[in-house]
Length: 403
Picture (cartoon, rainbow, N blue to C red):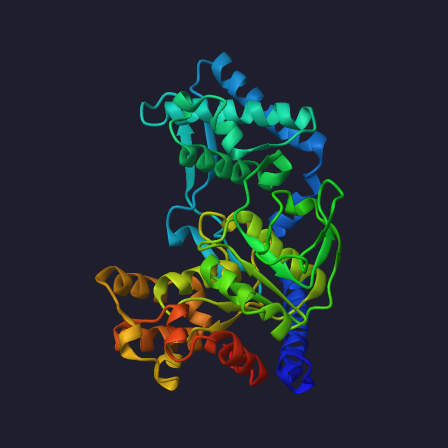
């Protein structure tokens, strides 16, 4: 893309985002003086994320259990609850964080309902302790296959790992537990991975799998002007086949292949922290696409204790906007009726803590509900096979049509 006029609004957006970032930083300095600030506690906890201190934290838990048993008292494990939206709060410029004073979850050794979870949590803690001692890593899947019959399911192990991270106030990657990545990235980006291998994301026709050890990535370089977040892998591949990286050059394009995993979110956050590039989301005009975009921007309830490492409040909604449906005269035959579940999801989204600051997003959801129809990204091909890449994205970016 040689026309500098196309990048005018992107450059303006970048300046606005940088200014917003400075304002939020100043505001945070005021908030941090409040001991009740969860952000403040997270930043303070960053000081103890060294190998020796993490080992000490785990050993303190084991010591506490032994002390309780020596006193004939049933031991318990405690961590912040993230079950309900009342357990989190929204902070502008930061995202979803754990609400101070929320009701903790207690796993009791003497409870029939929780003794199994107690035992498995201790087992995972002991495995983490060994990993940290040996300065080695494993995946969540490796943990599960330590004893699949005992753990029961991968999802159960995943939940325990997240709860331990929340309990210790230590990011999962510092506990030496990784997840196999599913997200892909392409475009104008070069870096060295945790093994010091050189990766050039421009030298691919299908995208490069995001490394499992994102925090180990170093030496990032890029001339990109924008980062494009794409909801679906199918759309990501279509865009690459249509040479989007040349037509939008220089750019970076990422997909989480649906709901983004932690590694994809870490990568998007790392790109923002490193380059401060406008980050635009391309998702389906439906409640599911909206939620995926909101996870990148505001974070998730389940990982609200990791908001500082995972959220990018600078994300903007590029499309597909519900208002685009009538504006572009998308054929009704290409649309899909909203199901009852879709409508319920949309109503639930409107009640999320962050929606109070997103009037334009609320307006778009209202349009979606009034239309009673949803539009997947692929429906743009009903206008023209190359409409998405050659017209929609180029015009949206040139005229700053994001919210």
